[in-house]
Amino acid sequence: MGTGLEQGAAPSTPAAELPTAAQWRLDSLGGLSGLRAGLRSAINEAAGRDEEVPLDDVPEHLALVATELATNALAHALPPTLVRLRTDGSTFVLEVLDHDLDEAPAIPDTRAPGQGGYGLLLAQRLAADVGWYRERSSKTVWALFTLPGVTPPLTPDATDARPDDPA
Image (cartoon, rainbow, N blue to C red; front, side, top):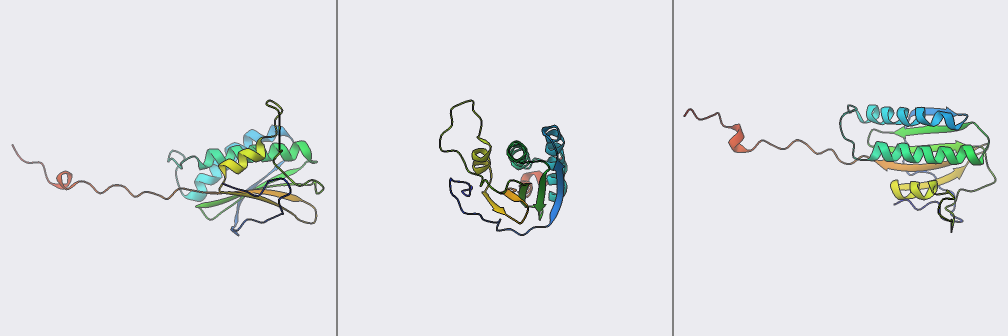
């Protein structure tokens, strides 16, 4: 899947330039549950689908990656952290902005079990693409997700289309 966070990876911006659908400001870890709920709602609204309609695993994966990246930003940089969702209804770019301009995000080479540090690896495995870039006063880690194609309903079988035979 995504490949933009290996040790020493150059900054990159997402290929898709999409309008902002929603954004959240987080000052502490306490805002993460509201972020997850808000993301699921924003994804369903942007996709024009009811909450009950399955969207594959995209909303859950996106919410999980958002939580991991926001946790990283809150742990390693000064608050606030800004989480932004950009979308056209089928492609979603999640952006997490922090203010630590000195450190480039990177997946650790080795990490003992239980020491954490798997958020970036998780993002890389669940997203279609992942990367990061710096601007004047912030650093952004981004992840790109796409909804699966919508399968139209099956055409009724010819036998189902015939009126019942009077017996």
